[in-house]
Image (spheres, rainbow, N blue to C red):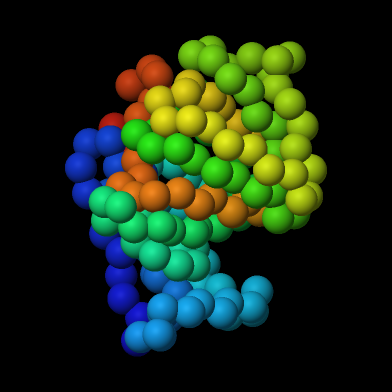
Amino acid sequence: MKRLLMFVGLATLCSGSLTVAQQPASGHVLVSPPAIKWGPSPAGLPPGAEAAVLAGDPAVAGELFTLRLKMPAGYKIAPHWHPGDESVTVVSGQLMVGMGETFDAAKMHALGAGSFAKMPKEMRHYAQAKGATVIQVHGIGPFGITYVNAADDPRGKTN
């Protein structure tokens, strides 16, 4: 049975919903790429990406979660931080990652498919997709995003 996942609170990743992959009562999760149910990027991220929760519930405190984010070429996430550790694996494409409170393309590191990064809680960082890129994020909930500059937060913008 599918369920919708609602992220809540000011520092959470989104104010919309994502479809969560089916999780059997036994706790095991098996998801092949064609079975991933992609939806629009959560409101806490700039529009244009797609997201899918593969396991767990990012909104639940203490729960291990895994989600994927599919980003188009050039997709940028402004400097931000998370309330817990964030672990990222690049599934395909290339993710450029920088550390600090100001977006500086000259200081970014290229992470290709198979690369891994871990940002400790509250570490200020930013990212950009170089070409179409898919990343997998896992951590322990609750997961949220707080932008260094409130003007960068897409949740406060109207189109």
